[in-house]
Figure: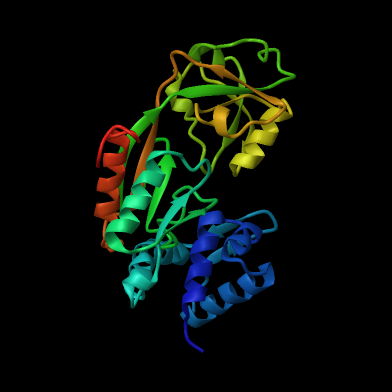
Amino acid sequence: MSIELHHLRGFLALADERHFTRAAKRMNVSQPTLSRNIRRLEELLGRRLLERTTRQVALTSAGEGLYDQLSLLLPKLESALRLELHDEPFRIGFTWGFPTGWPQEAIARFEEETGLSVSAHRHNSSLAGVDRGDADLAILRGRITAPRTEVVTLLYERAIAAVSIRSELAGREEIRWQEIADQDLVIDEVSGTTDLADWPRDHRPGVSVVCRNFDEWLEAVAANKGMGVVPEFVGRQHIHSFVSFLTIPDAPLIPLNLVYPRHGGHPLIPRFVALAQAAVATPPGTGPR
């Protein structure tokens, strides 16, 4: 038996998640199957890649080295294995809150021009599958800093505050940015847009709950575990009967970006980026693109 792609994909997922259950869910396999694949990879390489404890998973020095190489090489290999480009859809990844308006305009024009279908998939990872070869391009919010990726900021969104209807803030219509520093926040550590560095170092909010996806975040806010800061569109698209939204007149704007591999990506990425930029610049109904 030789090293196969599922061994390498499983290792990358585990290195990202540092947790067997989450990595297995991401790979759509059982935890015992993932464990066997990782052990087999270590056997075939003749070196230990992971330090396992009952609570966490850490990479050995050999594991760190393999991760650095595979995170660059595997997406290129995945791209090279697409033998017939036009038989595969152009894959757009997102973490939550797929925008409305300009993406649909850009997708329709892209499909019309290229004859290639477009599919959108939600990924519970910070780069929405772009770094793993699971997406050709991602729509992501916030400040993105990731090696070997290009980031094109399309627009900026206003921020609003989300609070439980049981919160003492629920009766207000707005809150100032510095007032939030006196509150406890619910943070989505995977795909959230809140950055504590946006407040002065000596006056920052506390963090009451750390979540790993938007749904967990929303339920924690609804349960009055803390407040949250999100793009304005959330108040329109993700209504929760136990959550109220407050405007933040002086909040930093939230960038909305297209993110894609710097090298070895889908050859039609530049065309989609150009169409997205045109769709943002020319709202629907204002003229041809």
